Image 1 (cartoon, rainbow, N blue to C red):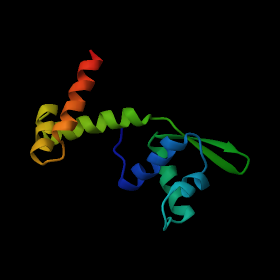
Image 2 (image 1 turned 45 degrees about the vertical axis):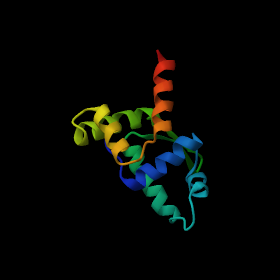
Image 3 (image 1 turned 90 degrees about the vertical axis):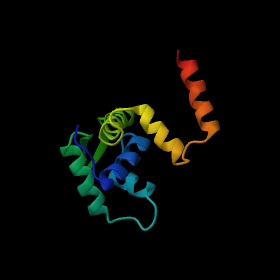
Image 4 (image 1 turned 180 degrees about the vertical axis):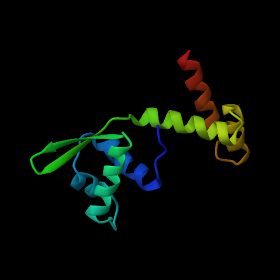
Length: 119
């Protein structure tokens, strides 16, 4: 799975949210100032080339749909972040966020509850 650029990730977030959609749908979801239609269309074509979306011609317009699931993308690239920056240790990553005050005691308790409920 090829890593996405920031622009590609932004567009994919909209495609995942919308499901099958048209370029116009994606543009309508974006905040102002919106990029030009042609710019979004170019990014979507790159996503198609990379295998993230499929394209279905409907007359003169094309509908795009996600091929790669959002959860699948997150799993692959979060694993890479943990591997590259935290020596492959999720515990080290959580510890980093605790020391950086990004996770509170309450957050940790919520995570513990999730772990206990998963078993």
